[in-house]
Amino acid sequence: MLDFSIKLVSGPQELTSLVARLDAAPALALDIETVNWWDRQVERVSLIQLAFRENRQLRVAVIDALAGLDLDQLRPRLELSTVTKAIHNAAYDAVRLSRHFRIHTSPIHDTMLVARRGGEKRYSLQAQAQVHLGVQLDKSQQRSDWAQRPLTIKQLRYAALDAACTLLLYEDQIARGLAAGYQLREVSQSRQTSLPLNHALHPAPGLIDIPQVAGAEASAAEGLGAPAMALLGVVTELAGRYSPDRLAVSAGRERVGLAGWIIDQALGSETDIDEDTAKLAIAELCERGLVSLNAARRLEATESGERLWGQLKPT
Image 1 (cartoon, rainbow, N blue to C red):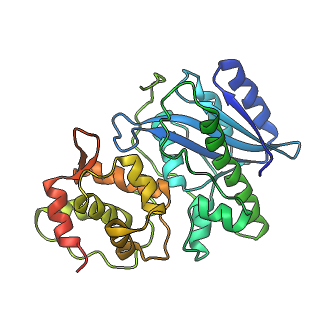
Image 2: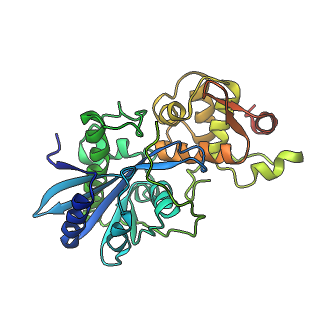
Image 3: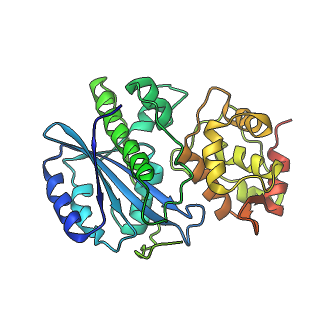
């Protein structure tokens, strides 16, 4: 079991103290938890996790982003050019920090991008932690309600462990001479309020070519990556089965039955799809009007989505 301390930061004095402690950290690992991530209009960042070394000891601060804190205090540390920020799939985490808090994280070492560029097929944080760190991540809290307060001990442990493993994976990759920078692009901003709540930049490579789409669906299909294509198929063929959270988790872990076959056809049976990549794909499908939530808050394809899948569907 990994040895690290966890500190929940939910008050202004705690945040000020944390920011001062980060001054001496040569590198940080960053992770976030979100709610309503499939709808940009109501999406919120719930937690910001920062892992760092202090006197060689591994520490993780879990910041409550719904607690009304002045998170502008984090900006100098997260934008400081002399401190590397390790993120596993920066296309998800860094973009949302920029969108909601106008924090433009830099420089970024993307541990997932390193794994992909190195030719690894299993590049989710869970797979990378097991292979390179010998750590088995407990993902039982993946579908937790991150808007609930107070958070449970299991939720805090889960959130902190992902950040801790990202920092350890970064250290391992640097020791192996591996690096992959991520450049944050300009994103549209939607300033997040602090009230509690009761298309991927690096799309995963597919093993099949997306067919040429004709008709009214051509514009909706433009730039659609293999993960989004696969999940559109799952939602269309299994209408009403998955909530957004369940599909994001299942896409990488439950490659069985019809859903597994569709994903394997799009990505290949040996290729991983991590939770954040699945979230990006689902959010993109929702934003393009290809899928929507029904009254039971389950995903269904729209008429446009059904027509598009009819052209994309493997034969």
